[in-house]
Every structure is written in structure tokens, then in C-alpha cells.
Length: 375
Image 1 (cartoon, rainbow, N blue to C red):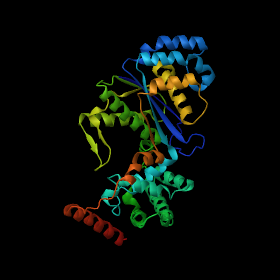
Image 2: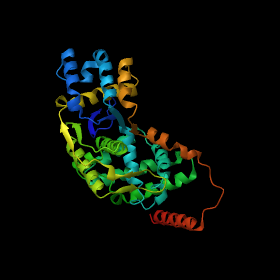
Image 3: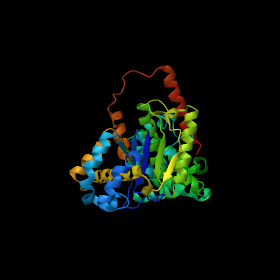
């Protein structure tokens, strides 16, 4: 398998650009190397359009539409598959806050099952309702902070503001859990370790790297299902994040060799890292790769469809000629709500818990109460 990766909406570590609230990754996969099999067609299309490179944002709907049917026919003939992945940046700030502050491995006032089971998503969505725009910005600024003392001060302030809003939560149990967790974090900010530490670490928590994790997982899953080895990963070259992307791919390659399987807890998603690609990404300028030209076009069309902008019928057909067997996914609060909303429909059992489980949860609750009482 050959993969070509492009992104759109990159604002780096700045999450709150109103003109680009979402980061998109496009992943184009093919059993043949598109840089070779696609070059002849693209050479003809470049000549026809009088350009050195097919860049969708420059050509626009009007100039792309006449060539869309030929690109679609090529895609069907070569079984080109497109996946689109999205990170909603303001939501990412809240998710980062939750993942660090409500980690039961760090915060003694958070019971294990409220973080390492699907209960975490219910708790996350409730906590998200307490954030306004300014508090999201404050949380992200503190998460990026490299000075530990300033970060600790900022985290304590964040938790105290949220504590003033906990009364808005709809049920007493949530108010109890969240209040205890926030009080513990405010009193023990250095134990939470909320800040980034340094610039390189900050890059690892950026939307770009969160999205690139999705990219790696999509390639691993698709190539494994098709029983094909990933021969090359071509990523559009840009200076800020390529190094961090390469490091992430290296970590995943190490996990592959270790045959690591990620299991967070009961009912949670699992992933087998032995499926990860063995080859490192190759970072290539967009004007030196036919595959990157193709993914640029499809990602541009997909983004317009997502944002409900005008797209011609020909471009819509081109998109679905590639995307019908691909994946569409996102990191967002709405995405989590959609994925886990079925939990609300699970009936409450009328049977009591087995004695060993009941004892286990009693011990967890005792531990939580002790941590809160000690504050």
C-alpha cells in the first residue's frame, strides 16, 4: 500500500482562529504508487489547465469541474481510497484539560472507573458544559505553559473557576465527583503536571499530532484488512510539525515490534499496534508528488462538503469515487457524543452486583472520599 497525506486548516498551537476552527487530514491510499501511475494523467491535466501543479485552492470549483470525471475514472480503475479526519480545535482544549486533570492515575479524587471505562465520556461531556470561550482559551494557555510554577498557578485558578460552576451539572453524583476532583487538582497542581514542559512536548499535544495519530491508525487498520504491507507514506512537507510526526511514527513502529496491544479498560476501544506501518514517513514538497496533488484536491472538496459550501456534481462524484470505501472520523465533543450516546439507552440492571464487584467499588469510593477529606 502507498499512502499520501495532506492537511488543511493548520494553525499550529493556536486553536482559536475563528476562520479555521477545524484541522483536517486527508489520507489517500492505493495499492499502486500514485506518483508513478498517476503522473501521466496529471501531466496532461496540468498542461490542459496551464499550471505547474494542480492546487485545488487556486483552481477552485470552476476549473476543477471539467477534469473531475477523468480523475474519478482513474480513481475507480486504481481503487484509490480516501479517508478524511478532523480535529475541532476548541474542543481539543477541553479534551486535553479533561485527559490530564481527571486522569485517575494522577488525581486521587477520581475513581478508576470514571476514567478508564466509557463513563469517562459522560463525565467529559458534562464538564465541557461548564466551559465558555474564555475558559477554553485559559485552559489551553495553561496546557502550553512551559514554566511549572506559572502552570500550577494557572491550573489552580482554572479549577476554582470551574468549581463556581459545578452547581450547573444536572445530577448530585456528577457534582460530587467533579467537585472533589477539581478541589484535589487545585490543591495539588504539581501532581497533575498540566503544562507542556517545553516546545517539543507542546507540539506532541497539538491538534496536528492528535490528527496524525488518527492518520497512522487508519493506515494500520486499512492495510491490515487488505493484508497489504505499507510500502511508502508520503506526507506533504512543512517545517513546524514534520519532525514531531516522524517521532510519533517511530513510537508506533516500536510498539509494532513489541506487539503491543492498547487496552484502557472494560468497554473501551482497543488497538493492536502490531498492525502499524514499518516504514517511516517521507516528507515531500507538494509540487513533487502526483499523489500529494490528488489528495490535495480530494481533501479540498471534502472540506467544502463538510462546511456546506458549493460543490459541483462532478466534484461530488469525484469525492465519493474515493471516499465510499474510506473512513470519516473526528476528534470533537459532538463526535464523542454521537459515538457514546448509546450508553444512555442501556437499561439499569435490577440485579445486585456480585459481592466481589460491590466490594471493589466500595473500596474505590472509600479511597476517593479519603482523598477529598484530606484536602
